[in-house]
Length: 195
Image 1 (cartoon, one colour):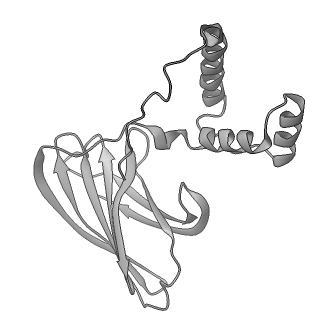
Image 2: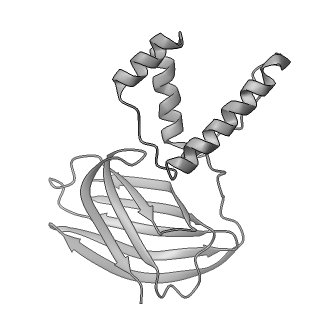
């Protein structure tokens, strides 16, 4: 999923706002540090109260806190470049009649692309869910491609920086969610531990 570059929407800027805007940025940094980058979302009653107290629109505040909750999705997008090699993995996990296969990894100079396939009965996979990959601290993972038909689904995840060619000690954790952006976990977690 490519993000379109942001263009400044206007040439106008009231310079009297500079100090306030800088304070907002400082408060955002403080908020991120206090929450350990996991702020959650304020209760609607709090948002209603703040909207009333500070003469702001409630829906504006709801949107703002939604953006703040998903800051990681605004990280710079790494496009894999400089293909080096393909690492076949061919490991699978069977859970409740569904087979999850970590088939392989394409190694690039600046990133890796991890491939997961899911095979199951058409009846078992009639609900649409979202899969996320986590590799732990130091790695950023984002879904880059996905397709499904009948009881089959295939995903590609871009991982940056690139994984080492020796995958020993790396744990791939695929988690399922009802909605994008890691919302409403289903409880399904598929783990591949490399040795």
